Image 1 (tube, rainbow, N blue to C red):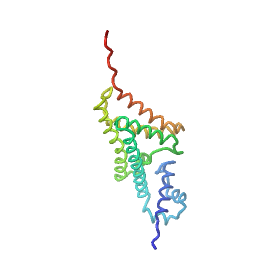
Image 2 (image 1 turned 90 degrees about the vertical axis):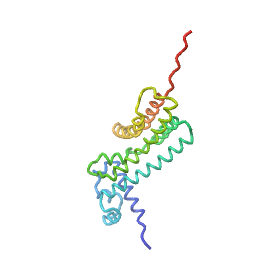
Image 3 (image 1 turned 135 degrees about the vertical axis):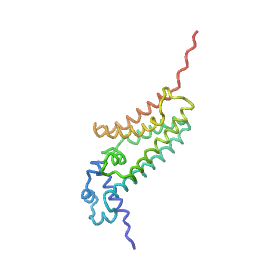
Image 4 (image 1 turned 120 degrees about the horizontal axis):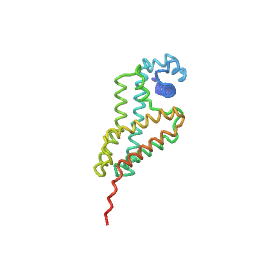
Length: 210
């Protein structure tokens, strides 16, 4: 009966993710990955031919997990409200709730990978681009719908406003680790929600003169 290596492969990926989030993938050696996984070098190279293949596989897995979160979150808010702006605001609330209690080393593996030029590959970049744009595309579509009903209070590029969702998360990850304040992630996402509410707040009707 053929041996199923799924468990070992998963252990390698889990160990690599933990080390990468702690110190960065570039600074993580194969020896450290092997030691943390508790396998032999032969077992490692049975599953991955080199560190680059491991890194790409890990990024793809992270992106798939991110896609599942995206599908669940967007489906949930669309069930809770039919109003496009409210759906985006609810998404912010879900994001804040998700990171109310964050892991010890909060961060985004996709962004961390892209920061490190020595690990760069076009295949991995494309995986990261698709995953990150998915969120911005959904938010942009919703904000454009909202703008038809209530034009923004000031002229803005709704694409840039939509991309701010990811920008805020990535920046908040850095601040959370730098300031040692994990709750800053949730607070920043809620601040983005406040900005959206202000941007799409209906203009006050002028008072009639007596």
